[in-house]
Length: 305
Image 1: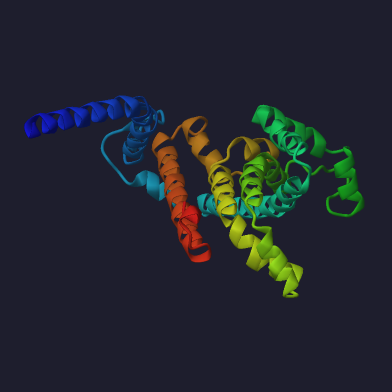
Image 2: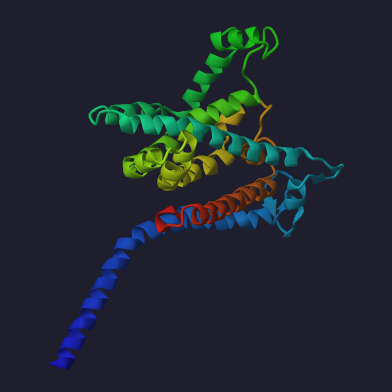
């Protein structure tokens, strides 16, 4: 009987393992084919030599990384470094602005009547259902010369006469904030829904100032949503292509534009692949930093990304 029981148990384990493999296999194949293999190919291209028509060829070389650092046949140029710094600055600035705008919106939605909350969330999300290029063209029309926004900026002396708010770095920042706002509002709203109001009331009963009550009673509880939203905003913003290309007008090129140009106009695939690897490294570094910040500020497992 013991041998039969062991045999039946072994068959059950094999059956469960087989079922698990069949369940995981479609997702694993999808990840390998569309994520792992392209990444491996990209890494291989980055270490190849640029051919006469921009396509990679042997022998292996580190020339693409030297070019990415600014070294060319005319010497060193800080252009690529400026592009990297601009990408980091635009990402940091837009993420901070998104947080500032999203916090009161998410809080206000949670304070509304329950029947109105889905409608207000829908109002936040619906614009993102439109194609990103169309939305960006909409901002180009709103910020062009002769529009009310540009006329108001001229009246305040912010821009020169007969000039518009587009193209400019301001337009790029505004486009990034508008585009990624829903990705911050939704995680914060989910965090506010779980908010323990007793802690807030306790802070108020102890005569804590509003800012101090927020920092000690509200912020730690909404930290998981904040970190999740930051990841959803900062990572795609760092590699954004459409918004800097259209709203920047060549004045606000970011790392995503640099990479795209190497595969198109400039025809230097190894340099483009090296830039893409730099974006991957920056993404992993950002995730690692957010994980450390989550552990230090939150302490709970739900905070850790």
